[in-house]
Length: 117
Image 1 (cartoon, rainbow, N blue to C red):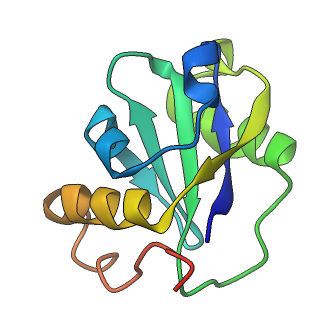
Image 2: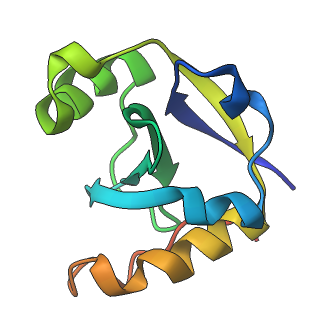
């Protein structure tokens, strides 16, 4: 089963569904109560992935509002670009979860990524 997430991109190579092999291309940027934010290692601030946590708290804001309020505060408004949904598989989410374990704050660690299973 594939999940949809928001991904800000400028490169067409990001359009393919993400798999476990792609997880190494993404690094942890930060997180809130509902989402974990990653950025692409090569594209930097030009490619940001917003992944939903399994244990959701408040309803997530629409992608455009989220970009203006959250992403702009993390990266700067000059880095905002249009968002688009990206398909990711549970294997990608599992691989990302493993790769970011050591960099997440201890109080955030119990909040797992929603792998759809």
